[in-house]
Image 1 (cartoon, rainbow, N blue to C red):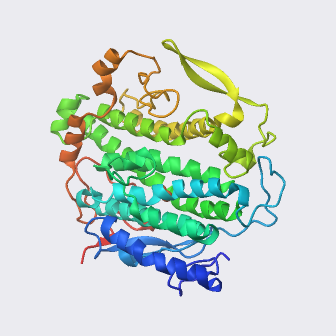
Image 2: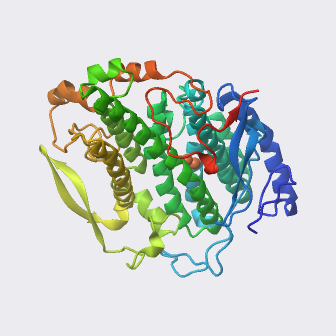
Image 3: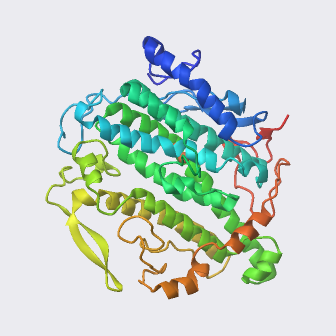
Length: 475
Ligand SMILES: [Fe+2]
Ligand SMILES: [Fe+2]
């Protein structure tokens, strides 16, 4: 089960060749996928040999194989974690039943919606990032970008497999539609707004992979708990790939901060204007990027009170983060959760039924996890001897979904007037000038081992290769 068959047109560990109709349907989808990759995948990369990792098994020890691969030849395939013996539905009204190997009829529409929404984010991020290769700060970073891109492509495969195998004709139509919507498109945009935003520069890319790929982690963790076993197994393997994406984000921001601190020390100043004349990204600008990405990403968890969230949980489709590690009754009926609400010019806590607040529960878990990494970034600043600290903004700041949509809240959590917002927003969210400045730093650096001036080199290379290894051969 864990080893992957690479002799087939579509590599897989699901015995695809035993289901000829499914195999044919997916082989029919495959050229459309490759066409999408040509049209919407990484700009100008078709001929490069890239040092990529490819999954060769799904066991924790050594699933990855590294080697130079032309990206259009990457072996995208279908890899599910091995089934867990006698797995059960672990929460909701079906708790204790055997996990479903097929889609229960009454949950079909909801499950399809969950899978399509998750699936839609995967190609969206490839589209958002497609021009970044042209301005990479190093060959190492270029390789990491491409690694993230091919794996997001594989995540699309993961969801398309489920749609094809379990949802018949509707599923096949949804799989086609996943290749037709495009990030930022006027007529046919991606489903979730954060996936229609541009990722215009590398600081935005690192923030995206730190914050938004982490949303991916939390969604996948919640779906890995699903009573629908194939979804659970698929998500478990996707999570092992996701870890690298968040590493790229965390280390990318960290290296940016490190380089800025080096110049701050050298010049003995924290003045953004002076630092900008030396070609590094001042910490207040990094904070404004952080505020933007954090707030846009926490919107992805949806409304704070949601009857859909309650339904998905009660019917065993989508659990909580680390559901099976929790010690409550996994039913949550009659339990409550504190959410925030605006009363006049104050945010006040209000107790609401837990089942309806599961979006908020997941968002709060996400926020905890995000803040931990911000603390690690601050260590870099502290070590350099500066007092500046990065901070996550209040969760009500700059929200467009849920109770806080349309309400002005400062990063410190004060409810403020429109006038105060307008007077300060330039200090809180990246401005056109910030973005233009960051864009002005983005030049392509591809000489092995060389870094753009605004970023420090990584501590170690990929797969224990040296930092100046030829991660990308341009041919
Ligand atoms: Fe993904
Ligand atoms: Fe990802």
